[in-house]
Each structure stands twice: as structure tokens, then as C-alpha cells.
Amino acid sequence: MSAIQRIALLLTIIGAINWGLIGFFGFNLVAAIFGDDTALSRIIYGLVGIAGLINLGLLFKPSTEGVREPRADVR
Image 1 (cartoon, rainbow, N blue to C red):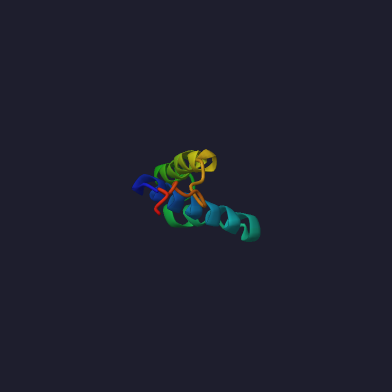
Image 2 (cartoon, one colour):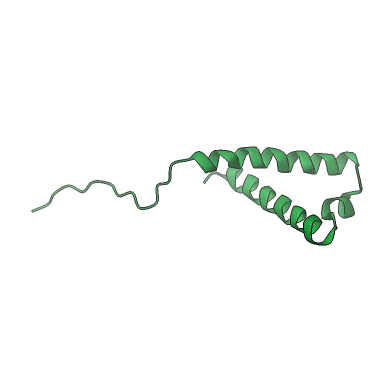
């Protein structure tokens, strides 16, 4: 996983936590920290959205788990 994908994954997790807080408690953490409908909060929301699009590629990336390279037959 590249550094950009890791950063995107972190931003996606932060966005998911924020949506969980909104859903369960009606509390918007981004708005509480950066202000409601400010330029900075809109940038944060935009970055989280872009991160989600980047992570969309991970959904369709073929899994390399359990795939083994063929071994040379040594006798």
C-alpha cells in the first residue's frame, strides 16, 4: 500500500468516525473543531471525499493474499 493510500485510508476512517458521531449522538466533530460551514471545514470534507474516491480503487484491486509464486521443482 502506498503512502497516499495510507493517508487516504486514515482520512476515510476519520470521516467514518465523524459520521458515526453524527448518527449516534448528533455531534459533528469537524464542525465543532473548525466551525460550522467555514472554508476550513469545507476543505476537510473535500479531502475526506477525495480520500474515499482513492480508497474506492482498493475495493477493486485484486487480492494478493494466498497467492503463491510457482516454485522450481528441486530434486
